[in-house]
Amino acid sequence: MDAQEKIRRQVTENPVVLYMKGTPDAPMCGFSAAAVQILEACGVDEVATVNVLDDPDIRQGIKEFSSWPTIPQLYVKGEFVGGADIMREMFASGELQQVLGTAGS
Image (cartoon, rainbow, N blue to C red; front, side, top):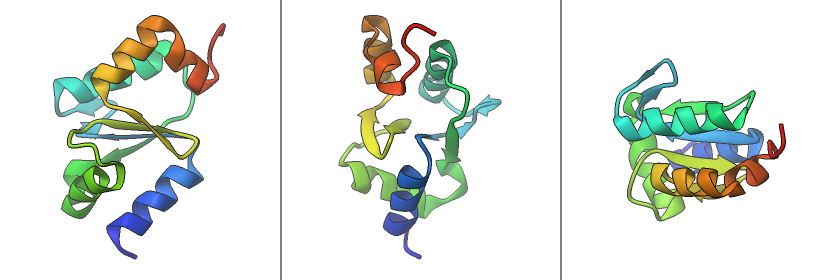
């Protein structure tokens, strides 16, 4: 299975997927750490995370898949949401909580 197919499966088989550098317990960059904190603040119970540092094909492939040059990248219900800055803005406005279905929780 090539990287594009693997990514397609990951984003369609999991309601929330975060492509990041490192893991939620040990993020390897500030943007990935911020993305994890935002999702935690939203009250998301289950997030599938993919450490792009473990797989160079996924690291490059996710950038091509989304046409977005940076990591982290958040997908919700198969749709690309954005990176850490977009997540931060959406969280501040309450939009991210709505997208995630955690508004009011």
